[in-house]
Image 1: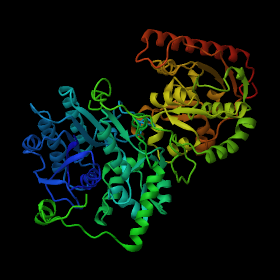
Image 2: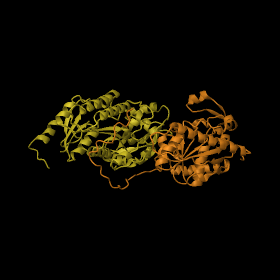
Image 3: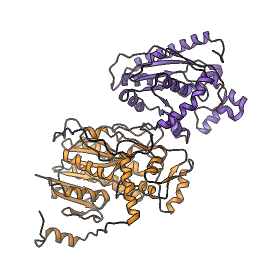
Length: 345
Length: 290
């Protein structure tokens, strides 16, 4: 019998991409996608359920669909996308309700995969060169997004302890670059001059977006439990990242950096303080545990940067090449359920 | 709190046997600089060596004793006494070992370097690493490198000239614990000459607090040379003596080692270094000519 999978945040970049990948997997029977907003990518057989962001109806959905796997991709790591309060609601309260539903009596759920971020390690001058999964950050979390991720992770720890029969996988993804994803980092790298901090050239690490999806599929397929850092091999100085993108760096002053970065937000570039810390101190995570579990990366850190640089060169030349996808429930339902539709099996 | 290891890989969940994957082709890695994972750049290191060479040979006229005690392969933790307002002993040891034994030394330095613009970046490019136990373990155990650490920390270079060659407390013996965990010997090095190259004659605690530095010194160099005194070392004669390596007969990779054993070993090394320093000072006729 195939897997029955629930994906959170179907309308988000990761949820949509993951559902598309899962649809190609013949071992996955059912894919249910949850979100407040409609999916932005074309989906063949994923069922979209509109739920409020704190998932209050989730236990009913879990019971009704009998899903055995929950892929929780809907943790917000980009703090520029919403207010701190909304972010807290999604990351903390959302995860709390999700896990409550997954751990309810008689729940069919046997695996929970959570997509967290290496933001939980922070970025400070007292950090080691590489963080291993069992290490904690050296300074307490200042930003709301970091605190909310730590809280969400701690709920997952409790869940794992209370539900020993469930395979719990916590993936901490490094900063992502790739062909499609838009983050404050990717926006910064698309400026004519890439912001940096005067006198600092820290080592940063990236993971390519395809490796993110492949990793989520991998841990689901192989049912790998545990905590894993997911990041490409190697670390690059920030200046080299800019160089691979064919850009120069434009230094911000090392003191009052936040003030200096302020006007940039009016130009459409928000540099959240997590990112300012990153381009000041850098961060490295040890990715060897996931490799030992059998995962093979397709991109190194430099490879991820190059993949992004190539895609953005193409975009500059031809513009956004893909037509905007518009989800329309009636049309989707027609395609999926009508006996008139001929399916190519 | 949240990054504990309560989600474990052991005992459960391994429903599917993980296939042993064949060794993959090396991934395409379009690097453009030669900066490695530690932030070192071979290019900048070569340049620094070329610039530092004359200072090492003609200014400090460094002499080594017992250099053969430093292994030419395998990890080892070098520890030394630390002195001079801007310590000159770290580059002397790093440069010297690399010149004589053709192997690099990773100098561990206080994290505060990483918070300083330019200085931190240059220090990393030239071969310095932040003194985090995890960094030291990785270098010593996994990469079998030579690592240099000054157990006195900033208390060594921050002492007044009147306290010269009197070793401060060796921290909490963390260096012994790291060597035990990494399964490598500790090799003490007694350094004579650094104290006189930039002696501190006055310290101001208020100023230090104000700028967030471990100490704010007034050096004899500054008195004589003005602002140039920040970089102008006196040409004191350097003599370095490598002492017998200390092997700890304990299994590596333990969760914890006996605290009292660690403190005893650290104190033994400190005493041995102190005695050797006094002996070297007894033989020294001149600060400038040795």
